[in-house]
Length: 425
Figure 1 (cartoon, rainbow, N blue to C red):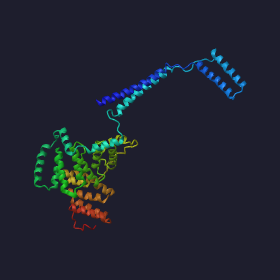
Figure 2: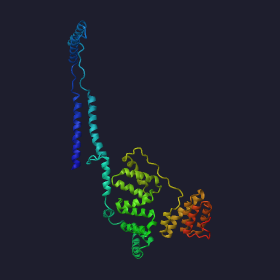
Figure 3: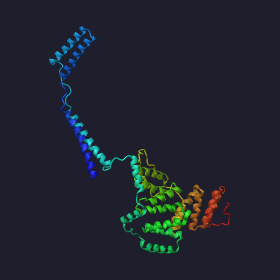
Figure 4: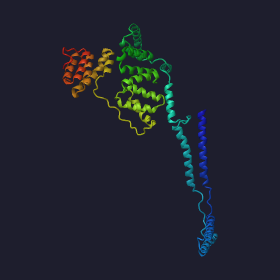
């Protein structure tokens, strides 16, 4: 009802403006200018009066005053006889009146169409500071994790079926029962979190992942927190709750460039009315993202519009990140692989190991790259090849004690005991 009243008010004002301007345009066709003779007569009479005043003031000689009176009188007689009489002014040409009327109509209708297109009918004027305060209030009063999860579960209904679900469900049930007897089994709870999520049991997955982080304590990685954040956001239908925001803060304190945390930070600001902050966060996220980042397509599509809304009209979307050729398996990749079945693990690591091995052989690399290759080969059970790579790495970094110590430590973790002093080249 309020929207209708406001629109009616706008229409009345626009109609009033149109009537006033239209009337002025139409009247221009009926206005006749005053006759040229009448106006000239008034001018000449004023001149005669001026001559008399100058004569009284003494600024004009009597002879000169008489001469001027005769000249003005002659012009009055000529004018009275019709010589030089003409009409000046007159109605505006019809074409000009039509053009002016068309401009008035287009301006009024165009302003209404523009407002309906980019305006916000139904909203009162809201200064920037008031909008920011409103956004902060929306952020402070947004629903908690439990409410968001309940709303999302109600909207989505039963989890989707997928191939292998019937086989997975009893296995997960067995794992739940087993963990009741092994409450400190970190690996078991990690597997439970992953598989509860596959089944769509997000609350159970969150509980299991929180148990993992609690058991690991200070040794819990940023990746563990990022996985928890992902689960919380998915369970809430993509919304970032206050509880999820607390996890974001924990992650960013440890890793200010963490992609998962930056992505959900941007979503949180967008959901609470601060697209300008979303732009700043996602702009930074784009700069630190790799070509295979799962959020890259979304933020690249959103950044130009976010820039426009945020008052950054000159912003140019940078080129997309280029895929890194020959990237080796990261620690997160190796950790994930260790939780897989042997066949799946070997298949995943094979490709990464081949690329990394080729790159190190052709171009060389950092001590971290060599250490990753040694560890990956150890996971694959290729002890002979891992020992060969270890020997080569020791030669490459023989003069760098810190790098050599790291490589030897990774070799020891992988069980590559060569009989040598691991602290020596």
